[in-house]
Length: 479
Image (cartoon, rainbow, N blue to C red; front, side):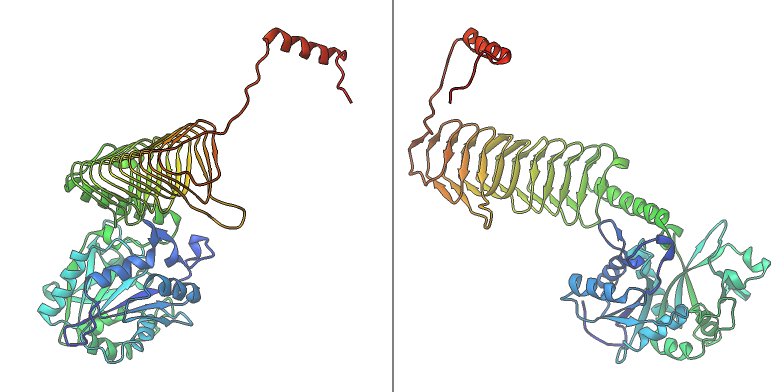
């Protein structure tokens, strides 16, 4: 984020002090997640993308939780501050609280809301550009609605010049009939905002300091107001769980469309969930019900099949993820295959051409090129060398009740089915391990390992007679 405080620099105020009682949550409304991240982050990330040198989040209800989140998520972001609004006396009062954190700043002030997460960067750029080009006291976003409901109405005078915004609670029937509504997003000249904020009053139906009253003050200032039209979807606020779901749907649809426009095939767009920070390469095919979450990166020519969930992973090109696989914070290299029904927990890395098959679970597992673990195994805290074959039912016994330990298998090892590796243990290259073996000690290269077990065999009829005798009580155990 830029740190200059020159005349054309930008500060951003994000209003996030409301309790959000209709959300029925123990958390502040702005910390409820939308597309995998708290709502307030969408405003902060937008401000950062616009080059804001100062960002002030105005919080009230649950301010301790808000501050804790911001410290964790944005620890390295200079110029970010939190202002307390207590008591909460309206939007104008909230901006006054923020101005105390903007001492020394010169330039524009962008006002956003922590619960309006659908604003497009291009729209806000138009807003900033309009204020600077016209040298207006403020620029504001407006929208045309069939029924403006509880939104403030934009009142225009001669030559369609904006004169004021009247809140719905204070409006006459004639004003309520106006279709142009205030979206509540502003760009102010800071000098004007400081002066106007001192002139705000509370003579209104809500008994609050309205930020909208600055519009009339700007109209009379000589510098005037510039209105910038925007799509109503972009100003959609979140007031309850229904709004949260609807805004999430719109955000997801935008992301899906962006991927498809970039050359990604999504067979059932309405069924998938894709977070905004996900990137997918051309000619990748995404199937029904797939979830791509967090900061996942997927290369070109991949196939992600039905029901798979991938979070914060990197997949190189030509990777095939088969149905109902779950991948978290893992890396899958070129041409590797996962699934069906595989579970890659954090720290798994599959080398080029490796295969982790059905009902195989991995955790902190490094599988080299061409490794095959095709079914029903647990591979935790291990490193497996190139071209090794892991048989069904193999388990790395990595936990001794106190500590985790590592298993290391060399290259071209053949692991028979139902093998257990009691870590820590190292197996050299070209070792053959027989089915049902428990490996408890290191094995040098080019060795064969089995656990000898006697096999007992007797005629089936004799076995049946013994069972019958026990059932009749004639056969008694010797003492």
